[in-house]
Image 1: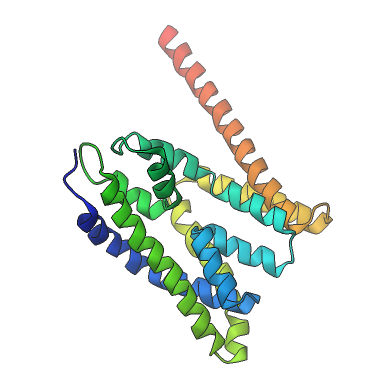
Image 2 (image 1 turned 120 degrees about the horizontal axis):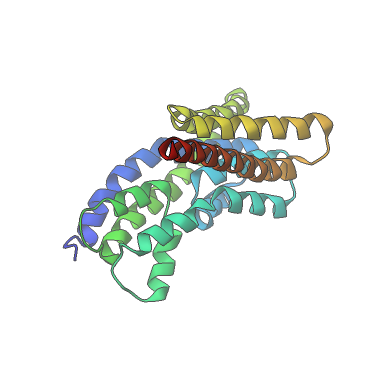
Length: 241
């Protein structure tokens, strides 16, 4: 059993909180330029707590996409959380389901990485709580501060901040593209499909993003599965010879 408890979790969560500072601050600034109120901005961070999904939601809100589609897109973007929480469940100490449900809400890419790499043995719930509480508080508070700062910026700077939204998407995408041809193919396929829907106007913005995301994932997985089968047959023929 891990000895680390709440204090150790808070200490580990401090690094995430510091990392969240510029990202959450920028989110608050962009939320202000998108037209969200301070209450709406903070509420989104409180109830969603998912950086990439919140940024995508801002672009969809700006495009006046149907709220139902925004929720569906958020679900698709965050579907990886099912895998992360399932994996983490094997490492956590046995505990009440309601406690697991509470800290499962606080699982992000960053908190998952810290909690799942604490060392050998089971991880205590108090340690996970410490990591998540500090990370969560940082994201919510800095989102609100970003909105307040944005409200005091000159109008021309508020308008210019909309460009930062796309810069943020690029910053999130580029590290994943390095040395990973599958991610490159996935991004290009999604972009091509979304571009097709944009130019043909067959689907609205929200539906186009959702369909592009799902279709690209299916297409790339099918291609890689077939490629794996071809390579496996080639190896079997070589061994048989």
